[in-house]
Image (cartoon, rainbow, N blue to C red; front, side):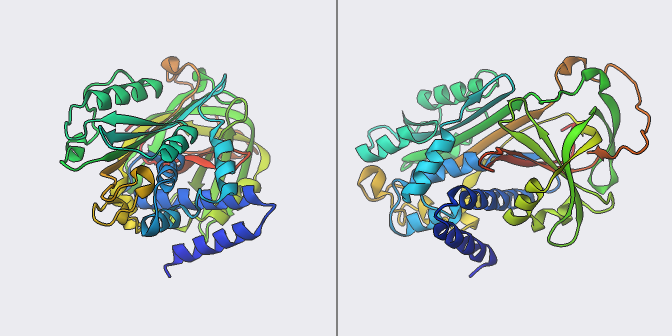
Length: 404
């Protein structure tokens, strides 16, 4: 059995045996899923920026579990590490998703999933009911044989505007031309967006142009936010013994925190730490942070990208789902031959101080303060958005170049 599946088996076993520890078990399983996803993307996004939402990826897989049977259902359960057919899991996840979308003074987060179904395809009433009840999800009829389907464009445009983007401009980068096959029946599109205000805000007047050293030694001058504040911080080792600093920056309302993982040794590249992240190490780090007064330097960054989940899921062993001859999704339509044509994921994150338009307007250089430790993200780092009550990782990614 592959090492990852052994880990999932052990985590799932502990989860099932821990009757009173549902939250802890699901947190470990969800974190393991997030890290596996991160590592899969990091391997193909060689030393470049990216953001991906584990919640935005797991959501459509959970929805498909309502209609998947046989080996198809088992492959989905193996990929997620759990099944929504467990009533305890189902109720717990539904309660968590009920808090999203979040729109408050301090944070705006949206998680959504649209299932585009070929017009005329019969759907099981039970499946339709489950989808409409599960998170911010919807079933949308569309002519998948026509790349310029009005239904698809309209839905995509609404999603873009909700996520804070401009109006839709045609397909807008979604590979609908790949979807427009004669037998396409179902397309999954999940989106996640987040923008937050810090609980202790960075002042735009303190933002400076400072050096950021990218991989391979390239040095860029980037807008670097700064504040001296009481923060949660810790110094740890990954499973390979590499030293890292971990910083937590909470958003207003404390609904979500941004965690930063930065190698302490400037000569150790981030790629040496990435393969050694595990759910247990993340849990240890986030629960062992201590309050400290620090100088914090963090570059502004904005990252938006999309991924073809089909290739990632195939590499995880989720293959039957996309095979018209093997997919068993009878719970969706009651018919054979129903399969997923494409699975596309899009996510974005924006980290900035209030008054971004005025940032960089001062050339003030801060003097080094004695006896005050410094967290300076002036080289590639990992970040993840985590909800403190559940421990769920809603977004995870890497900053290799803040100017990209």
